[in-house]
Length: 633
Ligand code: COA
Ligand code: AMP
Image 1 (cartoon, protein in one colour):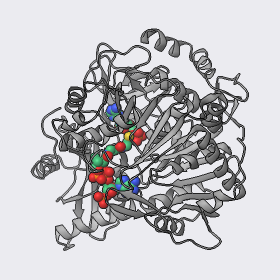
Image 2 (cartoon, rainbow, N blue to C red; image 1 turned 135 degrees about the vertical axis):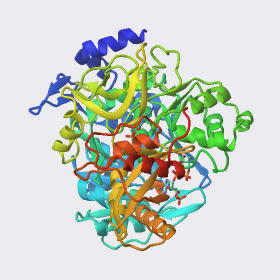
Image 3 (cartoon, rainbow, N blue to C red; image 1 turned 135 degrees about the horizontal axis):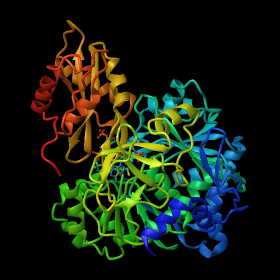
């Protein structure tokens, strides 16, 4: 099949194209309204279809002969345990846990927050919520109570599902006290909390509020799948925006299932029955789409890995997994491969394992720098696919379609737009730019299935954040260019979002935290190049007049504040005191200019600048402090 023909049809006849893809799924009632627009002009997919995503991902496969096939492989070097759940066992667990939730009054449309480590039960919980037609909101375990509280307050869950602890390399992190603290901080109080007790830590339970997972499962009555409409929400996943308040991306059931099912063959070249491993976390979109829903909707075996690419116990972890489970496709963030490369530059660990089952390595979550790309290709001998996507889309916007027509790869490029995504590069006025010119990456509407149609509880933010900059387009927040063969090169965010170890973080949120320190008059947090994690956040801080504080002490206090408010995952470790920050005459800090200095780009000094001399001054300080990216990759 030719990529061009497939892509062209998806753009010229979107409804026909996606109606056909929808037939690959077992709907309760097949959709007739394929692509519709609501009163606000927002596009939706498969509105009148009736379905249940958990049914499609689990029960359907049991009914069709996959009951004995492994559905989930759990491998946890940090707890020294492994297990396998077949599709039939998964169906049993999911329907029982749905029974637990139902007994607590969870109904269609209710929200349930899941705050769990990478264990099989996290997937069971998500599917059980989906089974009831309820809406899950999974919060990554590396977030602190404040972040969890913000999400609880916004999603207003009826219930929270958690575990007694997560395990990070050699340390046990107790989750329950974090959940208790978050509930205390949140104005919205969930009615109850289901707690999975793990052997590594025993959570203190609150009478009348907390329910023990194992006890509840032992006496649960299985619950049936509840039919939902194609446009009913499956989940809310919070992601960082430019302000302190995260954005609740709402994923609709129908479009999500259709796009993911299609992607499993088109992008990943997977057949039902094969083993797919996304080495991410269920707290991120990659985990939602390709640890849980994509592989299961396709009847594949998925892998839940509770460990790191290195140190659990060594840099051979990925290759050991491939060998042990005969993994066909491995998907991870470039940071993971940079970590492996750092510890095992010659990839000597690969020689200890048989990685012949591995056909392709996929990378996303952050820019795949050419040296990491070339190293991985060289050392593994496997094709490496860089694909670009976002929480908002739920699947790849650009990719090399391994199941349609693999194209020659170009280092630094995520290849070509995926079917359904009409990707354009625009100048500031919204004009399409010619090949080679860098601009804002935007996607012409309608977006294909699975992409967000609103922000939970804040439709205005959805419109202003994504649809207002370029009417008729979705604004991605990424900048980049296309070459003369249409290959897309994503160069980085054009807003105050940074990417640390493939984790998306808001510098605006960190600034709000730093600004709360008594000594801080003003500040700016920028993403600075980091050889391992891609970027790391660094605070440029202006002290209040006459405030006397040792700079090391200040840094320690600011680091502790960010860790407490956002969590360890923010990786905020540096704050530099500066005499002034470049600003406009109206007093706005020129963050874009700081970003340009940090990434060693040409600096565009706006005419509205208050004091032009502040630019060379801050440039010199940033260079001296090692905050300017050196060279190019
Ligand atoms: N629960 C609690 N804490 C967590 C956590 C979780 N689920 N995940 C990470 N943390 C903590 C870590 O323990 C660490 O804490 P510390 O500052 O006390 O040491 C901090 O958050 C930063 O974590 P991380 O970014 O994972 O750094 P690391 O040094 O522990 O590991 C890598 C470095 C490169 C191995 C790791 O970042 C990695 O595996 N990256 C791949 C990223 C990835 O898969 N992203 C998914 C997007 S697709
Ligand atoms: P998230 O929503 O957490 O998946 O983060 C999405 C952001 O990560 C995008 O907007 C990009 O900035 C970045 N990103 C993801 N994948 C890639 C990629 N393949 N190349 C470049 N940037 C990427």
